[in-house]
Every structure is written in structure tokens, then in C-alpha cells.
Picture 1 (cartoon, rainbow, N blue to C red):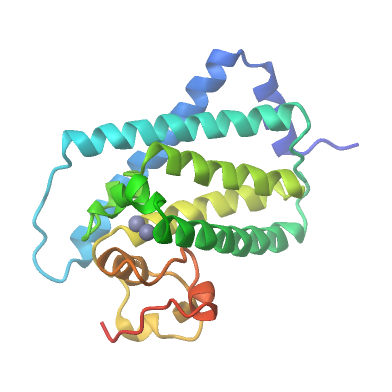
Picture 2: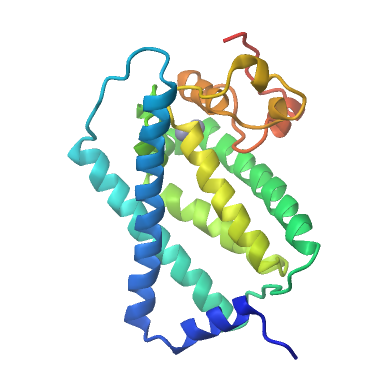
Amino acid sequence: METSIMQSLLDQLLQLPEYALWILFLAENILITISVLLIGRLLQQKFAPVPFTTYRYTSREWFICAVTNLLNTVVTYAGFRLWRSSYLVMDMSVSLFIILDFLLLFLAMDLLMYIFHYIIHKTFLYKAMHGLHHQAVDPKPIDLFVLHPVETLCFGGLWLILLLVYPFNIYAIILYLTVNVIFGMLGHLGIEPLPEKMRNNTVLKYLGTSTFHHQHHQDVHYNFGFYTTLWDRLFGTLQKTDL
Ligand SMILES: [Zn+2]
Ligand SMILES: [Zn+2]
């Protein structure tokens, strides 16, 4: 059987000692965080409606962000271990499943996170956990990582469970993870790069824009979705506003 590039890349990971895997996964997570903070700031500078006033993150924000990175590294390592011991199976082919599996991951995670997000808002878990993220009423890019440790692990757990139930295509997984970070960054920009006319276009109005998640930070009773507005429309929790 022909070995794909992805298969051989992953096989190389199998040769690495455990400590090297931890370093690699930590570096990957830190790189993602740095990209979000840098690109987020560039977008703010470019699209801020009023002259951009620069700001610094507090040491508290940096600390929580560091903890989130460590926990995300644990989730990455757990996923790798599950794959190595064949509990988690991935399809390595370059096929139509890249698109199909991506759409499936995108919608399934959006629904699962909608449900989880709704529950943590409507129960004691808000005060105990999710309220930390909502201390930001006007979010900044770092707020994507300002999460309670238990919440970070719950999101990671949700993700791993989904990967365990179906052998998703590896390229679809990589694409989904990239898109997930982009949506997370846009949701915590604090400004809206897209003009209103564009946001109301037939496709975009069903997607979670910067405004969509920003509104959730401003009024916690609406907009529990992440990537799409579908579940909020379906369950009647979409913020209707002309803002
Ligand atoms: Zn929330
Ligand atoms: Zn948020």
C-alpha cells in the first residue's frame, strides 16, 4: 500500500521520545497563540473605526493564557496517545472526504459547543467557571485564551470525544483546527473588519462574525454559537440587532 506524506510525517512522530513530543506540541500551541495575538493586533490597527490606541496585556492575562496553552498541550498529547494506541483512527487519504469531513467537523463541533456553552451559561457553572471569560465585555485577542482551566479541558475533551467516534480525514482535521483558530480570533477582535452590507450577505449572515461573538460578550443572553448562527436561529437565542 502506498504511504501518504501525512502518514510518513506522523510515523516520524512515533520515533520521537516522549519529552520531544511534549516540546513539539507545546511549541505548536505557543505558535498558534502568538499568531492570534499578532494577526489580531494587525487587524485591529487596520480596521479600527477610530484611531487605534495601543494597549498592553496584564500579567494576569498572560498567566491565564500560559495555563491555557499548557492545558491545550495536554489535550494535543492526549490526542496523539489515543492515535498511537489506535483508539483514535484518522483517514489519511486525499479525497472528497477532506471537504465532507471538514463540514461535518465544523457543524458538529459548532452544535456541541453551542450546547456546552448554553449549559455553562444557565447553570452554576457560569459563576464557577465561564464568568472568567466574560470579565471581558470588550474582548481583545488574548481573551480567546482567558478561560477557566476546567473550561479549556472540557472543550478539549469534547473535541477528542468527537474524534473518537468517527475516523475523520486528517486534512479535514487540520483545516478545521485552522478555521477554529481564525473564528476564535475574529470573535475576540473587539472591532468588526467586515462592512455591514457584507455581513448581511446570504452566506455570511449564517456565519459567526466578530460582531456576533462580540455581542455575546456585551449581552450574555444571546449568541451562544461559535462558527455559525444556525443553532442560535434554530433555538431562538440569536441577538436581533441593527448594530
Ligand atoms: Zn459565553
Ligand atoms: Zn468569547
